[in-house]
Image (cartoon, rainbow, N blue to C red; front, side):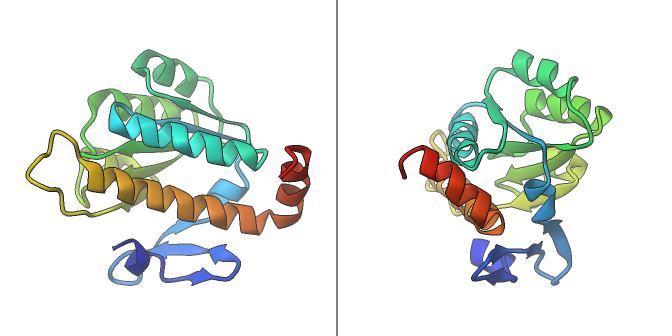
Length: 178
């Protein structure tokens, strides 16, 4: 599903993510032009958010991942229109994440939702909804394939932003000795 979604994957990264009908649902500039990226998730999706923070931070993008719902909502209230929230939820129904997203929207932030379901309460309220579908085993207590699909999408977005910001990224990574 991820490869099918990324119709415009090019050597310089993803420029558009499209739905099954070919309709654009996400433009990469929402991330490359952001002054700040905040990532919200709970449980296993919180781990994905922290992984994304680690990646985007290396690009020199001010970002932070919040797993605590109180921190999410307080931070969301301080965002602006130059900020992006990436809300991650396997079910797309996590009430605390949805509440934080609503507060962030009221602050003017753009919202990218990464969920495990095409139709979900979180997906309906996001500016950009990027569902990743996976077949879970009978053990829904540990939705591993959904988490792996979420991480794969984060990786694709990260690499695309890095390729778009190549020169500044190269300089920043050089400071880390990489």
